[in-house]
Image 1 (spheres, rainbow, N blue to C red):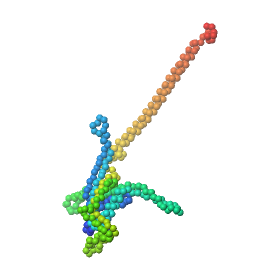
Image 2: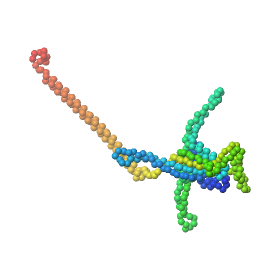
Image 3: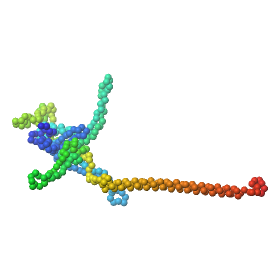
Image 4: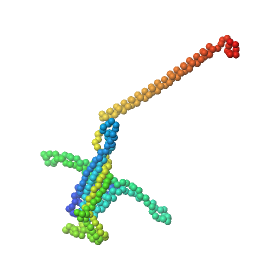
Length: 340
């Protein structure tokens, strides 16, 4: 039998219940593809939706003009990490530390070595930011990507004759955080180990972690009862309270949607086709009108040129007539030197 993710609790505890029914909070780190799970001891859960409008006041209008910008969704979550054994307390503390690492970005380190034969074999490195801390989180159907999850009520007739239809709630698409998780940006994180009213385990050097818990009768000593020896004093919290906020980045469209059939045989499609024909006819008419206007402009230019030519010819004719009239037929063309 394969050993599940939760395997350090006491026998008969929450391990099997959580593992078999998927009652756990799962985080998937996108840059490193690492997974951290916590038993779903949820102590607080709330969601907030902030609808943003840009309101602009204008002259002569009592109410502002509101332009929609977007809707932001945030999740506030608090959960408690509780240990049933020393081994589980150790694993819980490691998981908390792994989750804290997910709050930081990922880096790439480039190493440059000296050429072979160089007297200085020192290495030079440069570190660059590779990716931000993005997560996918999932908690059953409450925190999940609705594009791959569905929770519906169905009806099914009972096998016994005469019995009425029975209603069932069908939950499909129960995947892991990598496949069906909600893409989130992690916000502030609070980690609060309990030391006062819930006694932690404090051990000094060379002392066993679990010296007082005997193994179950008639069974070999399981992994959760392993003896740990410490070389230095250390402390492991029995209970850790955690809380954080997350900004949701949806990977699918949200809101209501109206489907418009624009196929050739639909009413909307026929309207679109008629509109296209009208646009083509208008464009053709415009081109014809443009050609007529160009012809009229050319005719007007020709008429003006002909009128100008006729006027010039008339002026020239008048000048010629006047010249002939001024010539003296009796020979006084040398005036004023001749005698009149």
